[in-house]
Amino acid sequence: MDKVKAKKHLGQHFLKDESIAKDIADTLSLQGYDDVLEIGPGMGVLTKYVLDKPINTYVIEIDTESVDYLNAHYPKLHGKIISKDFLKYNINEVFENKQFAIIGNFPYNISSQIVFRVLDLKEQIPEFSGMFQKEVAERICEKKGSKTYGILSVLAQAFYDTEYLFTVSEHVFNPPPKVKSGVMRMRRKENFSLPCGEKLFFTVVKTAFQQRRKTLRNSLKTLNLSDNLREDSIFDLRPEQLDVAQFIELTQKIEADGI
Image (cartoon, rainbow, N blue to C red):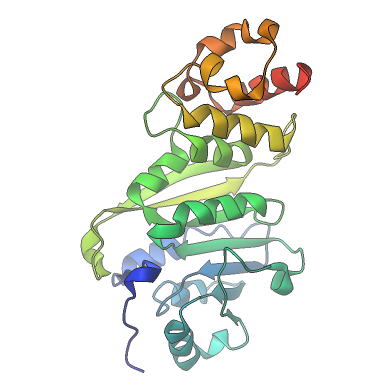
């Protein structure tokens, strides 16, 4: 097998630039885990540099043609290729509740879903890094006050320290995507448990940003808050004006209100 044909329905754009692949692999700190999982390795341009690290490397790949290619070209991966959909697979069939990092050149069509899945697994994932569509990578790392600051920003930053690392041109891929890419890293906070109900926190953040142009007094109407609570000055703000700590404070106020 000479090479894998990129499949549009899987959002495949194969990175050609070896130096960028090495730079992405080097975003791994190798601290706090012994295993790393690469999502969507394709033909292994990033994988080869991750395999050079002193760490147990696994890959998860839904494309059977890519799986065949990896098996043929990377003997170190034998027994460590998971031919499944990361979004649906019970990853603990492999990792058995151990800590592991995630890395990848993530398919742009499901990149936000991958981040939400990582947040579901945050107790096991101390580090998550890789390449996204530039706007998505920026959104994850954005601070309050920006138009791109939103649900993904607040939820990721509630549990992780996020960092936008570098931008990648569309011309280093085959086929080239129509947008630039961005590489970012998330490192789990030392204390990542919230001082409020996590489920309610997620609900408050998502509900607030669904009507981001409105004040919280209006966007959170569906939560049936008391009139007394709705008089609190925090409800004069729009969601993009609140940082993570303020969203936690807001959630605590709503909890105290009896939600």
